[in-house]
Image (tube, rainbow, N blue to C red; front, side, top):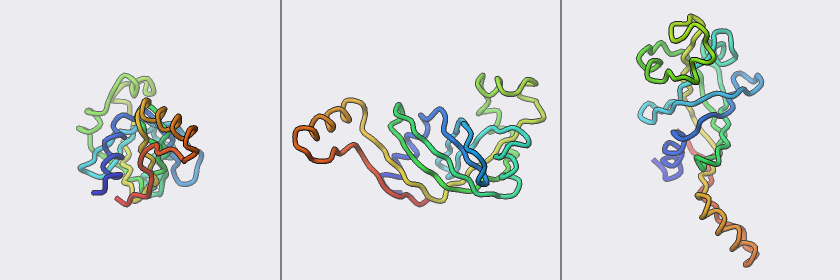
Length: 155
């Protein structure tokens, strides 16, 4: 595993939401739940949504992340599949998820989808203080700031 790939998996845990674009439809906000050991990111989706339809057909998707608190920016390409893992859904269930499903955890419109990334472009940036230092240094030296790692990752 590369240093950048490792940074991606560590930081994606702190991402609260990103934009998931399934089968070329408009991107929609989704809360990721990463499972590094499975090389997967899971999402709770609604029946009939683009994510649900793409998961049923094994469709391609893109997940876009821009999260300054997690110091992670990424375009992640992969495949969506249906997941019938009820235990995983139980583990992921939260007050935020419940707000979207009036019937609660047992709502029959809940779908768990598995996003398996195959590659990504990742920017793993420095923390706030490190970033500010690099910007200040750049303004003095006229060099481009070193704000962290950037590159392509293959999963």
